[in-house]
Length: 244
Image (cartoon, rainbow, N blue to C red; front, side, top):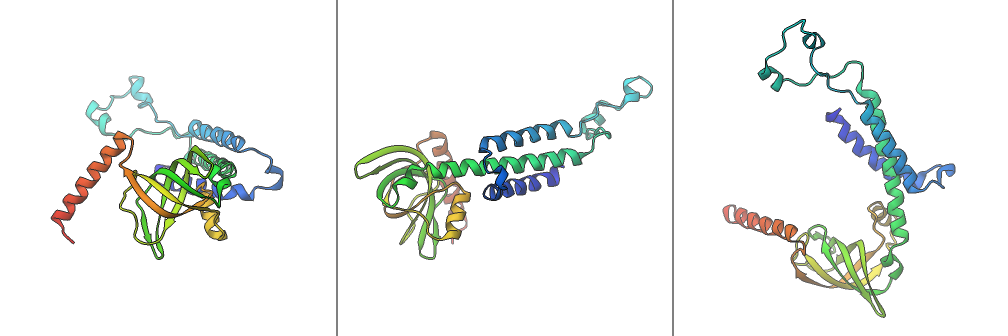
């Protein structure tokens, strides 16, 4: 089940995310936590139904045959109990992951509906956050994902924990993943239905059209900062060995 169980589970989770908006009418009142609870129950059932490793040869344990040498046992794959097939466990796994995906889709929707940044749009704001990924150059500028921790606007300020899609014109900022940035610009609710749907699938509510971007420093977490240092060292070494 390990070879094809993981791709099936990943597909089932994605299908569950898509299914949240398409729930039947009689299931619309179910909260997200109910879907998650049922999904976890199916995952537990999958674990219970999974084939177990057979503990040795019954005849060997009874002393009727000679046991394999310890060296052979150490490199041999554990035999499974033939009375349990993998199909029931796999079916329960797929159903459980699908239901967890549905519940996660409900949680993402609840986060969007209660998003402070979504309520602030279309105001101009200044926010502080860390890059979730390296900025990407696009046809009209650049874009990136920012995990926002602080936002200020005219007449107010708040600490938040939201992720925002940021895009801007011109060259991408000289920053890498996990760097801390300060960005100023206007919040917008995406008006393109396909783009809005793609953002909603990722739990994002708004877009920041960045007018000013400044790098405050490396990752505030010392362990993440260490990975940045190693990444920069390896990158510079490769560039020296294999110049463009």
